[in-house]
Amino acid sequence: MGDFTSYIIGAVLIAIIVIIIGLILRKRIYDRVDQLEAWKMDVMHRQVGAELQRVKALNLSGETQERFEHWKETWDHILTRELPDIEEYLFDAEEAADRFRVKYAKKNLATVESILTKNEETIKTILKELEDLLDSEKQSRQAIETVTPILKEWRHVLLENQHLYGPAEKRFEQALDQEQQAIEEFYAMCDDGNYFEARQHVENIKASLEVIGLRIDEFPLLYKKMNRDLPEQIQELKNGIKEMKREGYRINDDMLLTELRDMEKQLKTYISQIEQTDEPAVYDWLQAAEDRIQEIYLMLEKEAKAKHYLEKHMDQFTKDVQAASEDFVLTDEEVKTLQQTYLLEGSDLELYENLEKWMHQLEKDHNQLLNSLSSVNQTYLSLKEQLELNQGDLKKFKESHVEFRDQVRSIRSDELEAKQVVETKKRTLFNLEKRLEKSNLPGIPDYIKKQCRDNHGLIETIQELLHEQPLNMGQVNTKIKELHSNVDILSEKVQLMIEQAYLTERVIQYANRYRSQYPMLQAKLLEAEQLFYQEHYEEALELSAQALEEIAPGAVQRLEERIELPY
Image 1 (cartoon, rainbow, N blue to C red):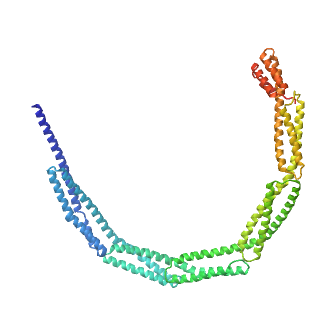
Image 2 (tube, rainbow, N blue to C red):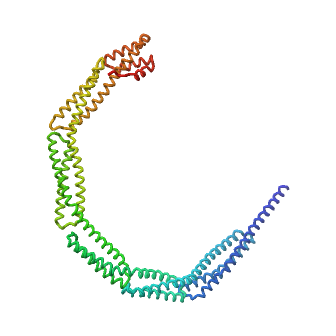
Image 3 (cartoon, one colour):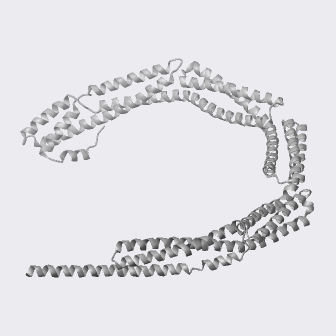
């Protein structure tokens, strides 16, 4: 019985919870219905109708009339069809909520919200377009009020300055008349209610009038350039060309005069055209013509400067080439004389041959330049450029020539230097041998004797080479370098050997005080003395020093610090 009662209580509680949830959901639906109803009423009372009445008061026609009808139909559709449909959807949602059909009620509410959102966008678009229409009418009239004074101002400019425009004044007046006609068309559009077309029309008028004004403003200067300035420049340039030709300048006067006559013909054609109509191409042509005239002036100026340059520098260049040629002849004789005594290196001979060819080419270029000056086929400007190239080439030749001559002349000094080196090294060898004799050593090691013999032999070889005809200084210099190295090495070895021998004697003398006390030391010292008398001074020093260090550490270093060679 207790379990059954629990089931009953549980079922009742669940039913109560379900009812409460249902009531809450139904309350929410009712609240949402009220919100959407208020939204619907807000849409219904929007001032769209009043705005349409404001527009209707205007004189509408054409595209404006079509737009107005579309706006009116759209607003009527919202009021008569979509808002009543919303009312039905809201009613169905309330009924569904009463029956706790929450899902169906929410579906109807979502449909209502979608319709209202769409209506909001539609109303916003209508009001925006209505505002644009009203603004278009207002702004267009304001714009046309600014255009009219500008048109009058340009008419005044033409009237006050007729002499600056010539026959073109008539075409500018016609262009302004067309804009006046366009203004009248604007007012007609406004009277007919074509406000959108009128707005676009006034923008076109402003753009067109701006172009016309720019042309009116630019024309006097353009007309003056084409009627007076440019013809005067062309005539002045023609006179200058003829004068330069009479003075002997090498210019293609026929080609230039023909080009200028063609320019005059084209100029007359363009003058006639701009008096009758606007010709955009004339602006580019005029700029190109002015640029070409300046280009010809610059070319003539360069030709005049080139002639002056040639008159100033050509004679000096001729003298420089002749001097360089004579100088090279002396070098040629010097080389031939040297070749009788010395054997020149292959690189020196190759450089000499290249210089000889270079000199011939310079003489050839100089003669060609002289011939070109005598004829009239080349302009002074091209001849000046050629002269500058030849001058630069001659300068480089002189530098290379001096370098080669100094290099060849150094062969003699190399010979003298080689002889001095031989004498110096002979004295060095003699001094080394004398030092070895005075050293009182038991003997001289074979490797020292051999190196002395080798160096004497090398000296004899060099002396023989120095007596050869022709003398090969390249080979001599190679042997001289070898002699330098060998004698220096021998000097170092002799010095080292004497130091080792003397230090060995001092070490053995110092170690003798310990001989009687240390038999092992006695044995090593005997062996070291034997090596010493066999001329193995380095091994003797190593053995004696090692033996002494074992008995008296640091003694060898002290001996080295106090050692002074007696020879």
